[in-house]
Length: 309
Image (tube, rainbow, N blue to C red; front, side, top):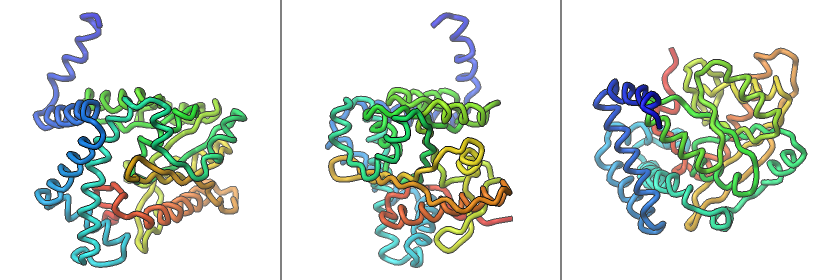
């Protein structure tokens, strides 16, 4: 790297707040451990970290318990919900170890650790050069899904939320690129065109679609209450004609398994807003079924049903 190239990076690091710097070093440490520890030790250690977080992070614990209560259909203090919340923290701990360990796994090792049900809905269209929109909830380990897709020769494109500090964002982008996934940054100019182009090029466009980051998403009913989900997948499907497949990725004792199903599309009316709402509701319905099968693996540690204004 030249001195000129290094200057913007140095300036960005100098502008970081203490909290941002702390966040970067925390995740950088996790990345180092993920690439260093053997699998059994790493998973056990990070599940322990998750258990510790469950007991000491009372605010986050309450948020996760509220989400779990909504999914399970019982009060937050119900023993089943408490147990599921505790397991959610443990499972999320394992997620972080596994995510940063993925790049050290060879393609054969990755394929041996991963079981698919319905991967033909990804393999067949891409073999014909046709793009697919794959929507996923934050379930199990979505990064492992992307890594195994590339191990199977699938061309995968994903989006990344812009994070602060900048070097934390670069850390996560590098992690995905090391797994063979091409990353498009959210929030920049021309994102929609870039995503449409990725579909036209015959890629699997993998979109995490159960959290609305903009606050302007589409209202859907999910687990008996109203929440918002991003409009992007539906709008891309309407504008490109690409099929939507729903993917759920679950942890197993030795690796992961994924369930892939084509989305049952509603009858389109020609009203783009109405059609986008109907498609997004169908995605929410499919996510309900995937999440209900393993509530503790739904790794949403923010309010899942924030109050509406």
